[in-house]
Length: 512
Image 1: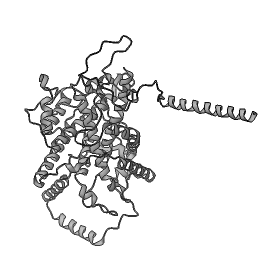
Image 2: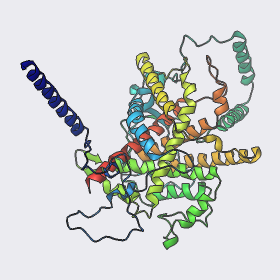
Image 3: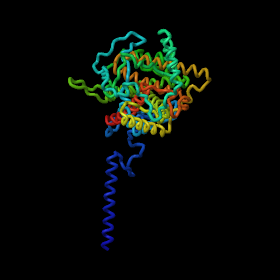
Image 4: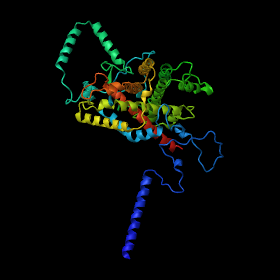
């Protein structure tokens, strides 16, 4: 009898402990256990799920005095859900994949020495209109990195060094040929040498979607990206509008007769503001439609960074930066942007998929054993490459990639002409970035534009990447360190934007 009693007490004690443990776990993770009186799962607010939108066709209900009035704070995310246009991927899948799997690794990767130092010429003149002077706001300034702080492997130019174990010794005949060419070259005039150099640069430029800075220029300087973060500096107004207006109006295949919605340099056109534009956009071929969405996505991403790192308070000793919810609503709220906000955010997700696909395609280039992200610190270099390979592993596991084969797939001659037009338009945009008056905005604008340009170069070099030699450098497809750093940092900015959207979603929910 006593044995049965003790056994029953023991079972009850274990059940009590287990019940407390389960309830504690639910409370710690913010999950409400469901009972027969709990609301339906579809009514429980999930921060990763788009909020329910009011039905415009539903008759208005009489106000409930016991219910708080509905807020428009969540309207920025009201329609940000479901499948994206021009591809078969949904917003929710990207949110989970990015925020929980990819973003933490990409963030750590950009903190590595190989990816944090970027060489750039911030003194190049604007090629399109007279320079209106650089921004005098102190936060626009970029602090260049002293030469003594640059890792020796990057500073010496050996950043594409191959592993010694697999770096083949140069062929003797090849060395003799180089000597002969050198002897012949020495008889050429300086003018002829310059012509040959120009031809070589022209050939190299055929694959580039960006106007690359000359790293040998005396005006080029190394910048520590971690010490010069992208944030709102106060640079705005006509100078900034002129840059984006030139990008949209002159480089996105748009005729002047079609008016872009919410253009600050053009008066509003009333009820038609935006309708005719999207009718025109949907009538374009896929390639030109993609081009516009890439630029819009990049613009949206930059705007999110500015809202997330906004100058909240400027004191004598230090400035305070942080998220500005009101600024975010002004740029993306459905009502305040006449529906443009949702389109802008969806274009961000579309751009994310494009650059994600480029990283997927370029993975074999870096997975070769002899490729070493060289800074001179062998232990750090090995850790950097291992982390990069982990990023590629996560990307490879993502099931919903953009299919770039649907682009430029028509008649060969027409497709070739369209591809070249596409490349030149984007290259022109990279040159417009030299017209940005704020040095810090110019730094991050050029870097992210070059990152996207490198992604496009990768997507349209599929055959060259497939034919990469396994144990020796390629004579065809190559990436410079400048392109590699821009590619990974540019994608990191998009990944950060999507992560910051999640944080803004939570802040807007708390404001209700």
